[in-house]
Image (cartoon, rainbow, N blue to C red; front, side, top):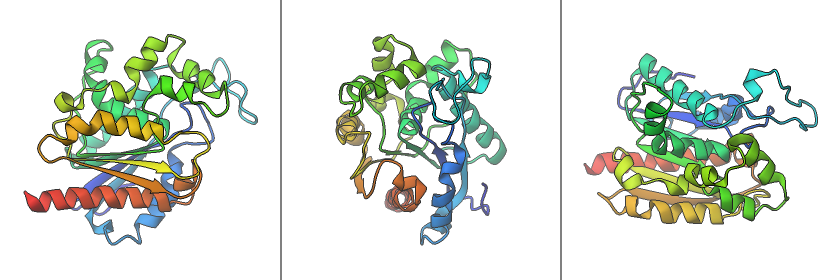
Length: 268
């Protein structure tokens, strides 16, 4: 969804949630937010918009669209989801050449993937042989994000829901869960391009505890303390998916990220 070209503007790239496996949530999750952004006074600062799809993990007991064993798009396991996300970013960079002037926004497990584009880039290159050249974003927005996967399982409001989808997405080795959790990232050394992070929670979230945002804030604090970087925490109204179904919540998050980046640019 490319907009009118404004070389000084920012791209916004969306990554959907759905516990790495829900076929009912895909790149179209951003549609309501895109409509909302058209009415935003900060819309003029947006150069382009994109929303990414990725292969899903098995969901054999989905009530209406169970996954089949022979469906290559619905039998993914880490790092398949992340490979698809970074491949999408690489494509957009080749075509539109916006460099680091972008905001990466992820909802739920999309927030996990957003931070993994930083923490796992080297592993994707060295272990999986990918030739990756994408610059890191100036800002990441995590909304109702999953940042500590073991903690997520331990605080699961509907046991054993999290155990099932985490095993489906990452396998049964909990050391991998810990290693792949965004709270394990060394952002001080890895994300030098970063200028701002926004962490948002949903007030009536029925799936994700605010503690996820709290532990991620603590992990980012040393990065924030370097060179005047900025961290904003938001509380959005509604349930886990209301922020994107209605669009208002994600619009608010994007506006906050844009405001932080614009203020930072003016100060430099």
